[in-house]
Image (cartoon, rainbow, N blue to C red):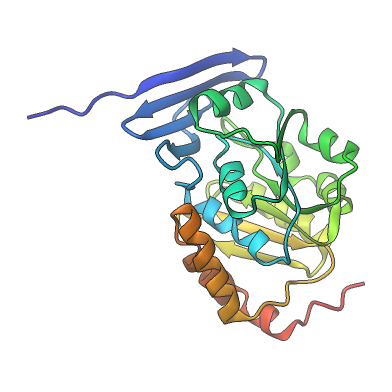
Length: 266
């Protein structure tokens, strides 16, 4: 009887914030911060195909917009989101931001993050980067987590207000909220609602995570069947079922999306 091979450590480093390591087994890679919490999971055969379902949910955001051109990822992780966005929107410019150079190094050397001329990587504090940026973003993704939970920015109203200022007119802030961080999620919901009013809707995904979609001016004006078709086509490009997430997004927010009752916010 054969025995399962143990995980191998393919990247290890330590900085002022702690450990960054990548573990590998067969075709999978896991980025961790020195404990058993997966920050990212990558199938190295398809590094543009997100393994974690919450990323499928986050990828719904750009599909609700007309031709997004400027994208920001705050909390780079293993880089799968950046890879997927490049696959789906090859003409879009992507800023990938992480406050730890070790995370960027791990993503590039051990997690399959693919450098390209439309991707700019920045070692910077997320708030400082957005505050100083001169770019008007169509989508800002925030997935700011540390070894044991959410980074404080993930729940701060001032940070969300800064992000709102840097969104384009059609722009949306997309925030991942861990299932295990109920108190932080409640704080994040309150902060988002304070900044964006009624232009915030949510998607519950498998595993219990909640994805918040906070639109700068108006909820998207979607045609349901067309939206489903776009999600199916996008999903085929990155080998994941985005149509399933699109259907859940619509089902969970049907009243707001169908009636447009929140589209009058000044």
